[in-house]
Length: 451
Ligand SMILES: [Zn+2]
Image (cartoon, rainbow, N blue to C red; front, side, top):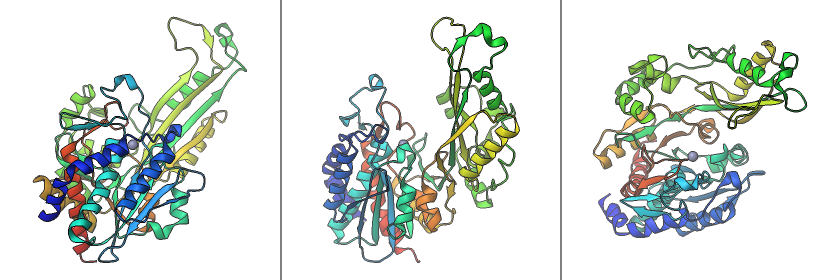
């Protein structure tokens, strides 16, 4: 691979410039800012490497930019990415303009550099370098670059339903990836699912003087009681049936957990909390982090929350509840269980709205693509990668891969302090260059894997 690595090093400046150009084009799906221009730019970048790109309609959402290149075999590796990014606010906390893609102290600072444009650019650059040096890719590749990941991929299911032929692949490299808190490469083999719910309670027609709380219902109390019925202080979720479909870890997944390094003290220091929930540590903590679902109050709003006092009886209350799911919990089923529980508890007046459901997904640890990514990470970094059976995050892994029986795995250019979704998002320039080489090596090695 040295010939290709040399080419990547010789052309590093131009690959970095391509990434900067992509980062300087805002593309905030949540605010519909710059989306069309960014889809066009990604299309142009794919065209530049011969991927014959097109924009695929998603029935109501931003288009998927799709491209493919036939290589030496029909064996196919797909790359899933997204060209949308999170909003850059709060702007005053950025040390440089989030859309300027400035390079300082060996890092590139920009909204979307780690999540997820650094990976888009690295994968396109890898395909470019490989073809320029060897004339042809060792296998066929597909690029599936959607525009709605940061808003929950609401239309990607349509894309997968309408175009199973475009999704089909022998393996997929997932959108993100990178290094852990100790700069070790980390490989994720799955995602948690999510069931995100908004709860709304209405009381009187409008806010009232709190003196009438003697006889008029308070939606804030209704909401507080309903929320308290969801989980006990022992952290056990109380919705009947919630845990019924939870699949316990396999033996090989437990071995992977045991091999994971102990980062508890760094994590605690980073978090600024004295200890983990329930005093957990060691294997029990890892099992909980990777194989247990959650039920989290993500936000609550009601009544007066400004300075000083205002004696008011609120007329409405609202909470956002996010449940991270594990195999084989189905978000629609969990939502139905939640509704049944609220009704059974006498909270039929509380409205519930399901926002952005996503199913959990996991690739077996023995999958060929997992082995290839782990081996090549080890070779390139000179370090044993950390393999996690799943990531704590969520995404459309099931929609795009598991439902078609495609094994997927992460490999990317981020790091533990990349600040994705937050001010001062950054990646190391060296990681970007190494990430290009890594993708080249993955393509080469996966092509050679026996089918
Ligand atoms: Zn993101």
